[in-house]
Length: 121
Image (cartoon, rainbow, N blue to C red; front, side, top):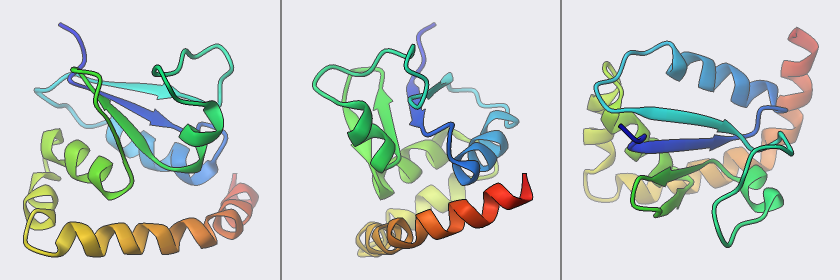
């Protein structure tokens, strides 16, 4: 059975590795694949660059649709047991918009947080 979602993440990022580690340990009825796009051997979705995929969190659906930012969290949480309630909450009016704004703020401080997290490794 092909993966319903392919999570495209930055395996060179200590924050991303920790988050993906949490997701990987969850047993989902929906097949989820994880692809470390920081690895030059990993093939990329058509029409994308490694730089684009490393700049933001992405998921590719089984039909090829590529999601990024807050939409990724909503799609991923919707298939993960124990996290589905967050996907439901994120679909309330205005929630996805707010999540995307918060994610963009996070991206601004991500380099600083990465340095801090790498010291903990």
